[in-house]
Length: 260
Ligand code: S3P
Image (cartoon, rainbow, N blue to C red; front, side):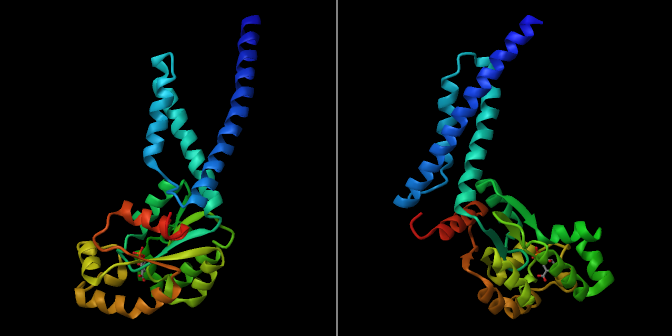
């Protein structure tokens, strides 16, 4: 009994020290953020995270604890990134663009890079209705789908510091755009008809492109929306020929200013 108490006392002392050090570390992280912002240096540097992991491992006396230490530090690094993102992006980062423009993949990449929550409006529509997008279009038509889409957009008014990937037709209703702009920056992921066509070939999940999927049909629909995407967007990112990672990095750079 005495041993148990003795060990628990040691743990309590360690926790006290850990909390103090954790607070000191997080304050230093914010200090680095301020410095980088002022000097317009890159904020998120994955190479630096690798260095930290290597360095802390070299301080370890018992090699058996190496993987436990690595998990702890991966978590600490995530927490640091999340804290930085909260300061840098107190608003939502909202991805708009045509079907196949990469909103979902880029959104997930941004969410990992910035440790921000991720929401996909189509996924929310599916969750709320209990139906697939295809079933909604078949049962209630496009008008019914747009109603559900709008309800989802209205429900996002209290969100902040979140990556939101929107369905391609969200721009068709200007009230959606006004609502999204209330607490977010809109990024248009722009892609050419040919690149979009190649990305969507073989895809059967989009009701609007399901029958007679031709480049002509796609181009007509895309062209009919170009002005809406342009009008809605705060930032435009050309995606043709770029990797998901490059697009995500470009978005961060554009949101933070020209030199960061
Ligand atoms: C639509 C795009 C789809 C989905 C629905 C309608 C559109 O989302 O919301 O099929 O009108 O462009 P993605 O852009 O994510 O494919």
